[in-house]
Image 1 (cartoon, rainbow, N blue to C red):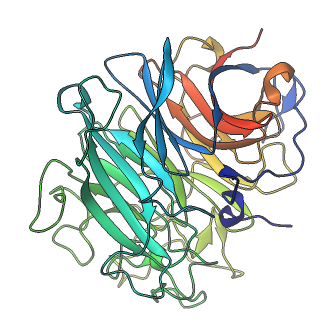
Image 2: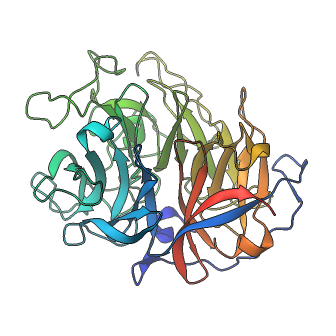
Length: 429
């Protein structure tokens, strides 16, 4: 049975539903290109007893972490302090399938301004069509000086986007090095970027195409906005160097052609997106300004629902822009690096596991006691399985999200052994 992202985030008693098959990997395994990989890691438990942890943010002024659960809670986690809620949005958030509290980010000057940004699903708000599922909300909150509670009444709505269906919501929000906020937005749900809420595009062989249309809505794109400014009645400003400023298209868009960019990450100025595939291929994209990443003309590097397809748009569509290939692609079966729903991390820049230095660490929802590695370079990056040592493999039956702290250490958020938790990569021992 093929499982798409809509199946993967269905909550059971507030937690993400499990999948069968959780066998731990052996300490040596084949990489995606058939070479051997002897690297393995352990998992240091940072937090446990969580229900569907989907995002993590790290306070820059203390050893404090903010952990968001899908059901609408943001926890404060701090060494030597009992876990406590920072923010409770359970009465404001729609949950189930792929809806809920999906992303958090701290303002780059959080130490000075205490601004916390949250991405969540709300019941349909004004301006959302009556036949749509819900409203995408990006909101700002102010955190108290002690960093352990949100100031009452501080919520400010930054952005709202009507969502046709309950799936393909993406959810990740990350600040770039220039202080602008990147916002991942899925194609609107359903299958194949088609049906209610999906507009027609330039590519005739496959109907629909929010991912290929940049004029009708903000779906199927990665947005870039200035949360420190205001343009008219908007709760944000448009960076003047966004690619569609002064051209046909919606100015918020930074890149497009995405199906469900579930998670974003930034490393040394480079933006990466893990775009969840339809039913054959998963992909990781190096996201460039004005880039078109192919959906729904392509799924990964392959034609979608057609025997052949173009590598560029029509000449009448922004001058025939190229459809950019992912830097990592893996199938749903038949390879050591395989799975059903990509979960990206970042380039490892820490010191706890020196042999991972410079490798891009990622995972799949179907964890099976393992993570993955890719070696950044030109073209398509080589990939390999990164086994989790047998004593820790059972902690991760499903991987839901990943994060990286200021020291470059990688964290994995997932579920296993009865609850959800946050785990930091450590050397195998």
